Image 1 (spheres, rainbow, N blue to C red):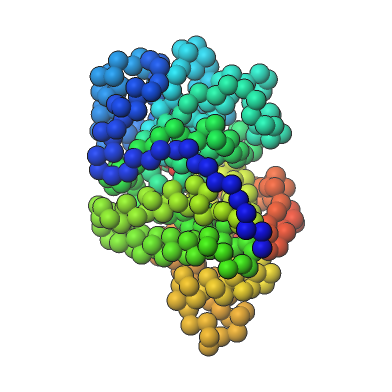
Image 2 (cartoon, rainbow, N blue to C red; image 1 turned 180 degrees about the vertical axis):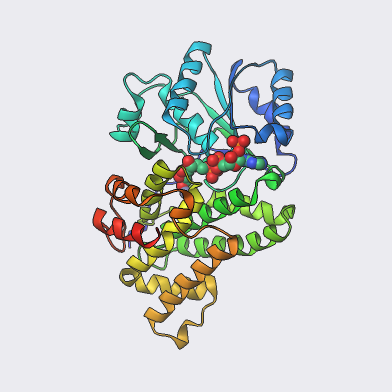
Length: 387
Ligand code: NZQ
Ligand code: ZN
C-alpha cells in the first residue's frame, strides 16, 4: 500500500449554536463589497436571512444579492453571478444555504475573472486554475455534501446536459464556514435523508478501494456507525440537537479529505448519479441511493474482502457463519434495507427518468471504478436494473 499524502485544508470552522456570533469578526478581514448568494427561500423562512443581513449592515458592508440558486445549480446561474462580481468589484462571496449554493459560489469565484469560457476551461478540459479568484465563505443550512469544507464545485450545464464536478484546492475552499445544527431542523425529511445518503455514499466511495489496514478505513467505519445511529434518532425527533450535530459533522468529515487520505477512491456511483441528475434534476443523495445497490451488486466480487469487513464492522453481520460471498450479499441487502428505512425511492422511474434517457445517461457518464472498471455498456446495465 502507498501510505503517503499531503494534507492541507484551509477552511476555518465555527460549529455550534452561537457560531454565527463569529461572522462580524470574520467580515473585518474582507473589503466592503459582498455578494450574498442563497437559494429559493429557506433562509428567509428560518430567520437566517434577517440575521445575516443585519450583521452585514452593522459591519458597514455594501451587499449585492444573488438569490434563487436552484438545487443542482446551473452554469447559467454561475455566469450571472460572475457578472455581478465583476460589475460590483466583489471582495467576498458569502454563500448561505446547502451544497448547491456553496458550489455555485465557488464556481462564480473561479469564473468571474476567467478569460474565455470557464466551463470549457475548468469543467470540461480540467485546466489548472490560472486566474484571480474571489474569497468564498459559507453559512451552512443543509448537510450532506461537505462543500462547506472542500474545494468541490458541481455544476449542471443545461445546454450540454452534463453535470460536472471540479475541485479547486485550495483557492476556493471556503475561508470560513459557520455550522449551526439548529439551522437544519427545518430541512424537509426528503432532503434530509437525501443528504444522509450522500454522506454514506461519500464514505463508501472512499472505503471501497484497496484492501489495506489503513487508518482512514477505521475512521470511515466510525463515521458510518455514528451516521447510521444519528439519523435513526433524528428521524424520530428532527430537533434532537446531538443527532443533528453528529450528522452535520459526519457530513463535513465525509468529504473534507480526511476520509480519503491515502485511499485510491472509487467515485463511479457519483459519476453515474451526476448524469442521472443532469437528465432528471433529482436530489443528489436520492439518485446515489438508487444507483448504489445495482452498482455494488455489480462490483462486489472484485472487492470481496472489503465487503466482508464492511458487513462485520459497520453492520454487525455475523460473517464467521457465512461464506465471503454470502456476507457480501448480506451487507448489500442491509444497505438496501437502510435506504428503505430512510424512505428513499428505489427506482429511477420514481425520480422522473424515462426509458429513452437511460442510454443517453449511460453514454454521457465517465466510466471508471477501482475494484472493477465499469464501461458504458455496464453502466447501462446498472441503470436498467434500477429503472
Ligand atoms: O433553495 P432553498 O430554499 O435554499 O432550499 C433548499 C433546497 O431546496 C433546501 N434547504 C436548504 N437548507 C434548508 C432547506 N430547506 C429548509 N430548511 C433549511 N435549513 O434543501 C434543498 C436542497 O438543497 P441543496 O443545496 O441542493 O442540497 P445539497 O446540500 O444536497 O447540495 C446538492 C448539490 O451539491 C452537489 C450535488 O451534486 C448537488 O448539485 N455536490 C457537491 C459536492 C461538493 N461540493 O464536494 C460533492 C457532492 O457529492 C455533490 O455532488
Ligand atoms: Zn455526493
